[in-house]
Image 1 (spheres, helix red, strand yellow):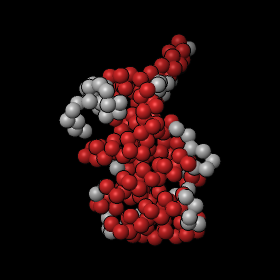
Image 2 (image 1 turned 135 degrees about the vertical axis):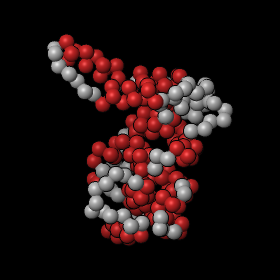
Image 3 (image 1 turned 45 degrees about the horizontal axis):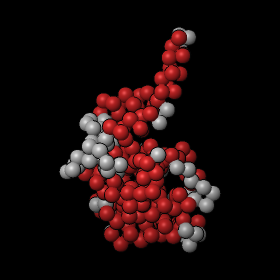
Image 4 (image 1 turned 60 degrees about the horizontal axis):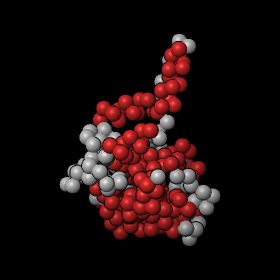
Amino acid sequence: MKNKNNICPVCGKYPIYPPHEVCLDCYQRTKNNSGLDEALMEREKLASEGRVLHHHLIDDWHNIDMNGLGAIQLMGEYILDKIEDDEKHLWHKRRIRFMQDMVKELDMKYFAPATRQQIDDFAQASVDFWDGKIAIQEARERHLSMCKIVQKDIMKSSDWEPKDFLLWMMETEEVFGWMWYQWFECIHACIPDKYNDELWIKMFHKHFHDEIKAWVDK
């Protein structure tokens, strides 16, 4: 990710601290609040008993310390994915509007061969669905239609791809399981290309300014 001013794109206060894409303060705050210390203590305790602990947090932070903490990774996984949805899905409705804005800006190649009009209409219909303006049966029909348009093989189990970013907008909570709680991590995995980093960061700040600021200020 290019940063002409070399200022942390999360807090906007301090210089970026290589190899990370964020400043030292944001990196340390994220690491300290990640639960890594507890995982390391648990590993030491088990080691004293002759047992071995393989913990995903320890592996994740080893990789981060080697390759750097990404700005999108921090905002998505460590700030926004920590916010829980409610019964009225007010938080998820905001996630969907964020995705609608992303879809408008992303290269159409990700959703080929759908046209710009088809893409925008589907994104708006997804917003309408979550706002209660479209019934579940109509949503399913629209979803199936878009699967055919973008030539998504719904019977094939494969890695996530850009088409999923679009199609997930009209899926219900029950479809996702654990992914519902790691939403931003999952949707970014659909479109991880680094040249979109500035767009992700811009949209994060546009849609979730208060949540990011609250994390920075606390």
